[in-house]
Length: 294
Image 1: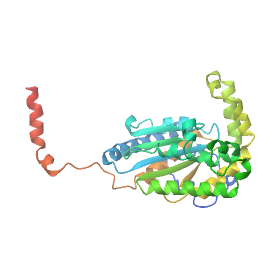
Image 2: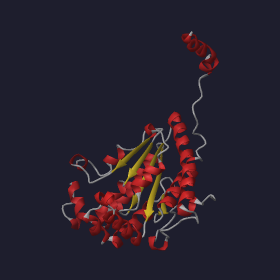
Image 3: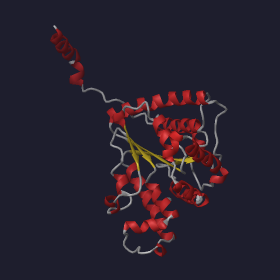
């Protein structure tokens, strides 16, 4: 299968989602796409092992998308070859009482990767300019000084949040966190099919909630909010990638390829060398261990 141009998915200016395709298959069948993904994810897993020993960078991988976009299965398939010590997945739900007693970025900050590890955000800090923008009444739960009603949540408020998020990502990227943000670009028709599947197949019933249909009715509002959030916050050190998501296997391959293309450029990531004294005496340590067997 041919190598893909990963930069075509990178956001470098204002985004209009309606003009971006939601389907990509590279003229390949499911088996070919799965095999292509397998090859790339093995490279990523090896990179992470080396990165763990190098202990200078962490990698933050963020996934956003409409319901049924395939985030859970993507994460499972993308990181299945990783050593479990090297990747931590965080799924951010409705903020807890404790989380609401802090600023909205706090729970994301404490989930950032240690040096040498990957952190995966399944839904992210961008929920704070997406779900809360569609449902601004949720902001009132944060008890922010000066915000006592929805009327206080104006355009300036949202612009401040975009600036805060940009500053947050700039800060962490300057301190060794490599940031990748992926929007799974799903069509409304494909979402309809996936929701029907949840209803029709008994083993998937548990995934369905009536609330899914209520949010679906707000599709256009969400698309508009995504467009502004992505356009405002795709920066060179924390870029967004808009990934066609109607074909799950292709989406997984694209994301793996984006990660590998960018991470493999960090040629300074290598396993540390032994100090000269230890290296000089390796044969002695080997003899000591072999002697124990005798």
